[in-house]
Length: 369
Image (cartoon, rainbow, N blue to C red):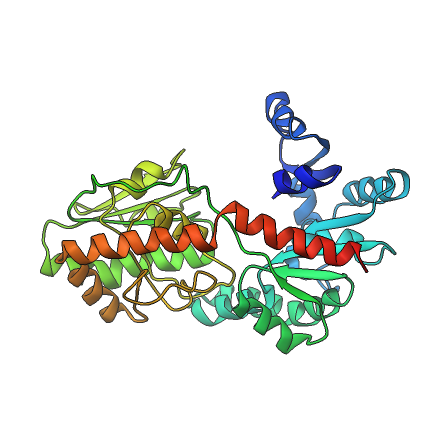
């Protein structure tokens, strides 16, 4: 998205980097786009301290954790001195620094955070998680409602997120700005393994942990009973012991994959029993772009809007999920047909050209006001 903005506007990016500053070579990649860059180091210990000090404030944890005074100062200085026409804030945690500035502003919210925390609260069965997520959900209801009125435009990746935020605040100026995927890199393969299921995602994300556990404990045993030589791969970064311990003779755990392409191209089916969260599933965009048949849930299909049985397969409980995996594994022609339609869908709806058109439309609307 930064590349798109730099193609059409003069851009200065102010960002923070977790724990360590980026290398000079990494910064040069961004600067080569014609972007002026200022990066500050983010210390998670300072974030934790901020959250503790603001525990009883109106700020949700996901905002207070990143509420760094040094970053705020850098943003305010740039707005004052650099002849800025529009501020583009990525996520609400960045929007917090600019929400009250008298300047044109776009908030790239991505997803409805109130919806995310509500679903996470409803899905978790861990007592401490219940308490934390309920507390965060209730704070976000008030905070997110107020934030929507402070920006000239707010973008979300799915219509479902927009309909959810409208229930909280119907007066905001909301737009679709979907996520794109690199359809050249994530390309189709005819060399798929015959009985390999794949699930992938960052395993420090609560909804991905739930999906991985559900797959291994509730869904995969039924599939393996019907097809004894089937294999499940669970791949991703930041795995905890609970996920690592899912490994067995038929379940392979792969950590810290540098490039998912080879796994998407190996897999017979990509499986994602998504139960919570909000926004759009980028891993599904990548798998679909690779022509990998996908079995997911109704919420997993949000923002993708694939047709069940044509672009992907939808199942909303563990038994149905297992049945549909078994059916797909036994029907090579159906898998091939769905794989072709899946890639065609992504080529029509989730290329970076589509994102560019959406973003420019939003920016033009702000600038023309």
